[in-house]
Every structure is written in structure tokens, then in C-alpha cells.
Image 1 (tube, one colour):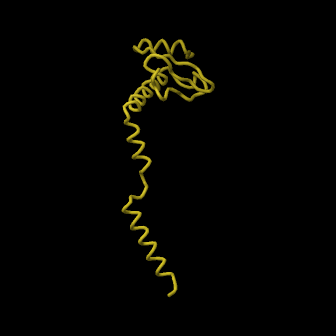
Image 2 (cartoon, one colour; image 1 turned 45 degrees about the vertical axis):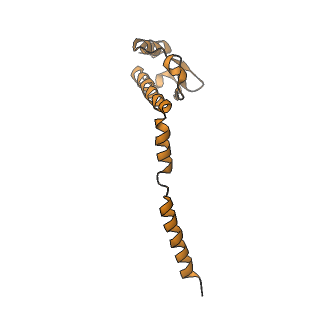
Image 3 (cartoon, one colour; image 1 turned 180 degrees about the horizontal axis):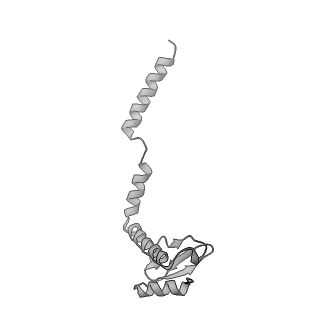
Length: 110
């Protein structure tokens, strides 16, 4: 079956959503209904046939969940944790500087 915007939008309506899928330049995006306030609404695929109807609906569900988290501020907390992951703590930095100072003393002639 050849997929169309009409088929995808019909399925969204059948599932109770007022959002619509629209075509952009090299991507698709959801607009209207609950998607009107979304911060992220795009699906970056070149053609409608890049995904099956089921995959389009799954993308819609995933974007809905992601935007609910974004609007609730939950992703900001996770992003802060991710940004600091792997960075040395202040305590670790102090120990590192002391070790560097000791190493310089050992190498410098007296």
C-alpha cells in the first residue's frame, strides 16, 4: 500500500488526535491540535515512503512523550546531568592540581 498524508492524518484522527502531518523541505512535521505547542515536532526523512504507517504513528507517539517531558522540564534536568557526566568534580580538580604541583617540584632543579 502506498502511504499518503491523507492516510497518516486519517489514522491520527482515528486515534483521537487533532494534529496533522505536513511536508517540509526534506522533512515532515506535525502541526495543529496537541502538536501546536510542541517544541520538537519534526521527523527528518526525505519521503513519506521512508516509513510505514505504523512507524509514522510511533514517531508521533514518541514526539508527544518527548514534548510532554520538555514542557514539564524533565529533559532539562537530564541534560544537566548528561552535560556534567564525565567532568571531574571540584574535589577531583583540587587533587589533580596538587598532584601537578608535586610533579613540578620533583622535576625542577634546586
